[in-house]
Length: 311
Ligand SMILES: Cc1cc2nc3c(=O)[nH]c(=O)nc-3n(C[C@H](O)[C@H](O)[C@H](O)COP(=O)(O)OP(=O)(O)OC[C@H]3O[C@@H](n4cnc5c(N)ncnc54)[C@H](O)[C@@H]3O)c2cc1C
Image (cartoon, rainbow, N blue to C red; front, side, top):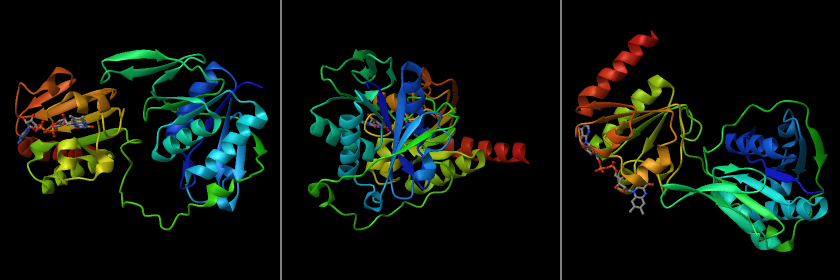
C-alpha cells in the first residue's frame, strides 16, 4: 500500500500543532495515516479521523531519536508507506535524518507545501520558492515550523498497535536528565501574538517592556539574533534564518531593524507592527503599521492602553 505516514510528535500529553498541520495537509492530497510513539500515549491517537499507529512502550518514554527510527522504518517496510512527513523540531529532524540513512531515502527539509508529488520550499534566503522532488522510492519531508495551519481534525481514529522491535544499537543511548525552561504563557511557535525585542531595547533588563506587553496581550516574547548572541535573551526565543519561523496573527517588533535574516522568520505573520526610532529602518518597508518613536516612551503607553481596554 503506497501512502503517507505522518510522525505525530507530542509533548506533555498533546500532539504538537506542527504535526497536526502536516497531517491535515497530507490528508488533502491523499491517504494519510499518523504514528504516535512514546509511553502511555494510546489516548493521543483519538479523534484524528484517520488510521493512527500507536507504538506504546516504556522503552520509548524518553524523546530519543533512534528507537523512533526503528518504529518508523518497520512501519514503512511492513506497511509499504512511500512517504513519511514530519513537522520541524529538534527531535523530528533527528528522526527524519536517521530514517533517511536507515532506508536510503531522500529527505527534503524546510518544506512549506506538498501536493502529493512535489514539495515546495523557500530558497536563496527566502527570496524564491522552488519545487523540490525525490528520486528515491521512499520520500521523506520535513516541514518548516509554522508553515501549515493546524486545521482542526475530527472523527474517530482507527487505532492500530505497533509491535515495537528495537535494534540493540538504538537502546545504547539513554536519557540521563531532562530539563524544561520555565515559561509562562504560550511558546513563540504556538502564540497568536508575539512581541519581539531587538537591540533597540538598549539593555537586557528592558526585555521587561516586551514581557509586560506580551502578558497583557496573552502572547509570547521573541528576540533577534543580535540580542540572543549578546546573552540578553534565550536562544529558544530567536526568530529568523538561524532561529525559528513563526506566523502569529500579530507580530510587534520593538527596536528591530528588520534585517533580511530576521524577516525570513516572521514575514508570514498576519499583521506586523514595528516601533523604531529610525524612520528609515528597513522594517518599515514590510510592516503593516509603523510607529516612529522611542520604544521606551511608546511601549509603556501601549501596554497601559491595552490594560485599560481589557478592563
Ligand atoms: C548568517 C546569518 C544568520 C542570521 N540569522 C539571524 C536570525 O536568525 N535572526 C535574526 O534576528 N538575525 C539574524 N542575523 C543577524 C541579522 O543580520 C541582524 O544583525 C539582526 O537581526 C539585527 O538585530 P536587531 O534588529 O536587534 O539589531 P539592529 O540591527 O542593531 O537594530 C536595532 C534597531 O533598533 C532601533 N532602535 C534603537 N534604539 C531605539 C529606541 N530607543 N526606540 C526604538 N527603536 C530603537 C534602531 O533604529 C535599529 O533599527 C543573521 C546574520 C547572519 C549573517
